[in-house]
Image (tube, rainbow, N blue to C red; front, side):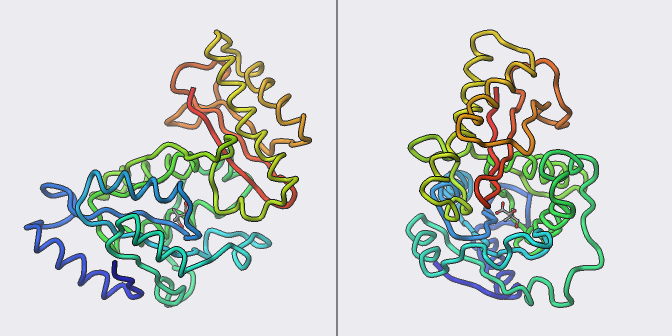
Length: 288
Ligand code: PAF
C-alpha cells in the first residue's frame, strides 16, 4: 500500500493504473479504480466498504480526510478521533492500494471554496435540519474527491442514509461518471451501528446507545407482523429508547428515494433515527 498526501501524486498513480489496465477514463469500459471516502478512525464498517469495492475493481483508493467544512460551529471537528498509524495498518491488511491522506491545506488551499455543491431539498430534513451546512460540506468534499481520484466506483455505508441519497442524487444530477455502491450497516454484537463516534461513549452511555438499534428492530418486527401505521411503528421504537431515557432528535418513516415522510409503511421504506446519548450524537436506520 502507498500512502499519498498530494493531489498531483494521486493523479499520477491513478493515471498509471489506468494505463496498465488499458482504461481510457472513469466510466469507460471495465471499472478499474474504486474510491472509499472516509474520515478515518477505521472500524469494521469502513473495512466492509473495502471488501465490497474489491469485488468490483482491481485498484482501491481509500481517502482519509476529516473534512472541516462538514462540521458546524460547536461540533466535534477538533475532537474527532484520529489514529493514522492504526488506520494505515488496517487499510493495508484489508487490501487498500492507495491511502490518500491530504492535509486541509491540500484540499482547501484557499480556504472554504467559493463554489460549492448546493444539496437542495433532500438536505432540508433529518440530519440536514439539525446540522445546517453539513451536507453542503459533505457533497462539496465528495465532489472534490471524485475530481481528484476520478473513480469508476465509490462506496458508502447505509448507516448514513441521507448522505448516500444526496451523493447518489449529486452524481445523477451533475452527470458524474461514477457508480455509487452502498453497503449495509455493520453492527456491534448487540446491534449498535458501528461509528467512529462510538469511541466517545462511556460504558453506561454505550448500554443506553444500543436502544437506538433495538428500537428500530422492534419497529421492523412489528412491520413484519403486519403493522403499517407510521405512528404505531414509531411508537414501538420510541418505547424501546425511552427505557434507556433516550429521546430521538428525529424518528421518521421515509420514502427511500425522496426522503418524504410516509404515513403508511411499505416494503423498502426507511425508518431513520438520530439521538444524542450523553454528548454523542448517533444516527441509525433500517429498511423495512
Ligand atoms: O461519511 C463520511 O465519513 C464523510 O461524510 C465523507 C463521505 C467521507 C465525506 O467527508
